[in-house]
Image (cartoon, rainbow, N blue to C red):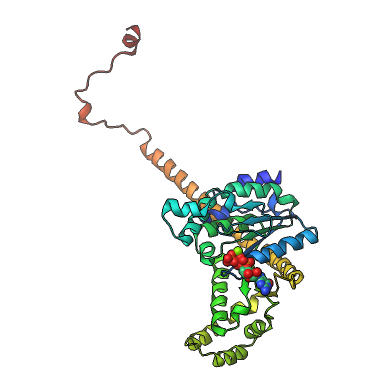
Length: 344
Ligand SMILES: Nc1nc2c(ncn2[C@@H]2O[C@H](COP(=O)(O)OP(=O)(O)OP(=O)(O)O)[C@@H](O)[C@H]2O)c(=O)[nH]1
Ligand SMILES: [Mg+2]
């Protein structure tokens, strides 16, 4: 069965070994039906959880079967029914007490503890995968807990090694109307893009409050952004202005969707962008994983061949040569006769 195949190939969840978990070319996992994994990442309060709820209700409406995973141990109330909820496995408040940690340390440690069992989560997902269209993941409020931790990398890389995976980076649009905040958000987005190397959709949320047209203009028209900067009193003006040029490449290749998680506006367009991003995964990310896997196999093979050659060489050198046991054995007691031994 396809899932069994996945499970056999799955390494003990380790980021560096993610490529080893990749499907073999032509294996079951490159079969036509695979769910798309959408990982929702964004600054605290950007609307990840509300957006997850919106996505969940949308896929129910269009009858696209989905699987929902909550990775935020600190969420008080989930507005959607999660198939897997980190809170069922670890209680982050207990973790804080037990390890004498603050809230962020508690959330990070809870995520680390959960990740030690992530192979079990993957087994559950693998079993359901052939019948699913989407796998949705909500991440902790403090963005760096997921994006800069080993656990976040392990979870992302292991999923991406098997399933078409896309990052949905949620931006709080009303809070990004100042050029400096906008730039900070974009710099964070670009760092995540280069870290995960996964296809990316930039989701401007809360468009019911502020339309995201200004953001699209800033991304496509350098002068419009500069003009907005001139009106900004912030001391960061010079730095932000120069950063803008650095981000030009990022802006060119990025997919943008404006949504309101609250009203549902723009969700259809978001799913179109997800479909495009999935195609990018198939054409760019997966071949790269397979190349890495092939490289790893070749290195392993070369290492094995070299050790065998060394062993054969050593055996040839020693062949027929007398072994000198050294003078220490000159006065040694004669070994007892085996027959004497047996007659005793
Ligand atoms: N007006 C408006 N408010 C929204 C929208 N999406 C989310 N919110 C509000 O933004 C606040 C934060 O939303 P959450 O969904 O909890 O955001 P989050 O990113 O999951 O928050 P953390 O997990 O704590 O980082 C809540 O008060 C939501 O009601 C939206 O599209 N429009
Ligand atoms: Mg949340």
